[in-house]
Image (cartoon, rainbow, N blue to C red; front, side):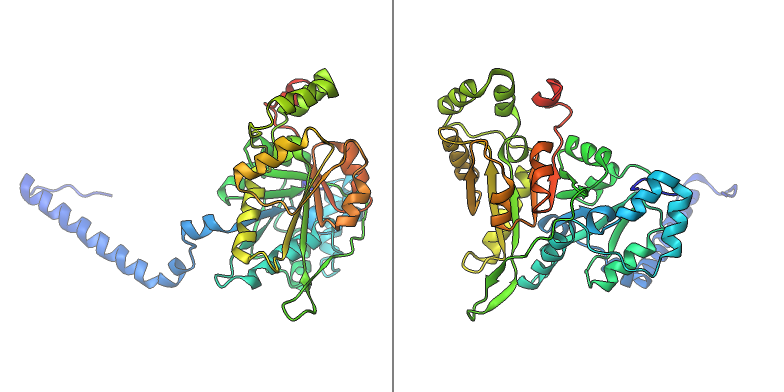
Length: 366
């Protein structure tokens, strides 16, 4: 469903020097006119965001299917085709869409802007394969729920990948696998959000400074290998087994793991936590990994080397992740394996992180 519709110079007899002076005068006059026009359009220029300011904030790209529940609409697209889907969206333009699997996370992330004097800690950009004509229903829902989302990419069925870097995207959530794969291959954190299960997550409340319940706390959970870290160690496990994996991790316990697709995003979250303060921080993160002792030490030392804060860590040793994630109250969970995300999605919103096309796991055909 994310693929969508569509849609003179004059001759002069003057001497060379005089001609040159005349041309310089024309150029100067032209510059003056252009400067005057620029002054006249000052209001537009002032709306541009300084590059350094854009670079500091966290930018989240989210597709319409990740943000809202478009199950019925997607079924129409799959069974009846593009034309029927477009017609349905226009006919139901005033019908407000229900929240989707990524809604709670996006709502909470936008709320972070209330905690900062600069007010631009996070920006969310709608990035959709929908056409401009069929997108009004999405914007009506955004307005209905009071989400402060003003920027969008509406690609009319074209790939969204080229626009991720243009918007300096830190995280991209979509139900369309091709776009997520391109994002991962471009070094951008991205996940294929699970739409199969409509998990109703009870948001956790954090204590306010007055001792009463305050705003909902953001809770994000990550797998380790192939998500925060590269898949190098996981490839050893897949190829040579558990004993070889554990021996490798013990031998290299003091050697930090290499950064994976979500390392930059986690570091940016950690920076936000430091900026917002630790006592009543509205962000809480968790590492939920199938690793166990003795493979835990390298992970902890890696976080220390990166100067990254992870609030909770669960070394499960192959135990199912669903119940732990439910207990943690994750607003989203990122994992590289479908067996983990499909199970977790029954309890919390989840997104699968595909392997980079050049990664060890991809080269093994896994």
